[in-house]
Length: 325
Image (cartoon, rainbow, N blue to C red; front, side):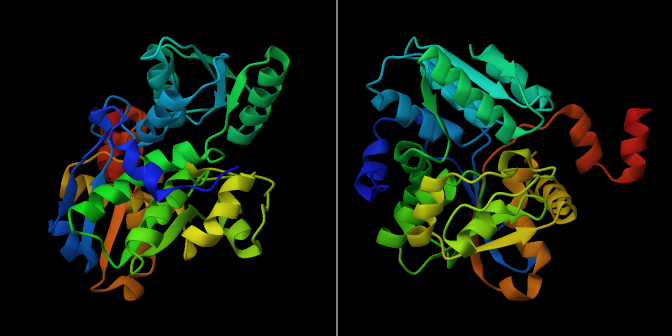
């Protein structure tokens, strides 16, 4: 597999559907005072799939030479991106998701034209089912985190921040399958070497942090977190290998910190951000002394939250109870 390329990240800007590009970079909000940092939030929720995944999937499908049917596994956002990119080019997609996957994301994937099959108790079980199905049907299996084009599409976020002259001291990046962190890290490493790239995982899904420390994939028995977009227990080899040269550090956050971050983002910015998209802010909350006064940026990389989860996570307990009643 070839390495992720800065030249390809730059070239991707002319390939990706513009609806996913040049997203807002919110700065100087009241959130700065609440966190005691200079925070820039790259808002990736204001597009047709409410996540950054359209960047990488657009680039991948646009450049795909293999004409076979496409199969993938997804917690929801990647599947939406792949379904939309494929539909724009008259290609079909079958997405495997866990039986307990976010129903909002499942409905969105189907609305975009994907055939969705619910298999397995979690994302990695669904991924194994997708691999088997692709092999049996001779389809083209797409694995998030395993293809450089997906990371190069995600890396356009860092390019946009860089071209605006607003690169921070630190990028706090949600770390799931690894395409987002390695794409952003590739651009920062070569174009903005003064910026540290720090991946953020959920405490209940530490496999990518363990893998980063071991320099090889380290699986865990389970991935137990509200942050379904980064709930990985079986790391992708390509992503782990690429992290060695693109990511400086990996930190963990608790689900409690994630919920606090979601509430702060909603209260100060008026944004509904899903748990995986809020982990950068959660990292600041969890270790405030480390980040005090720092210039930090983070992508708010997804906003697919069900109404029930909004009530549960964004409303104070008393108001959440009243809303349910």
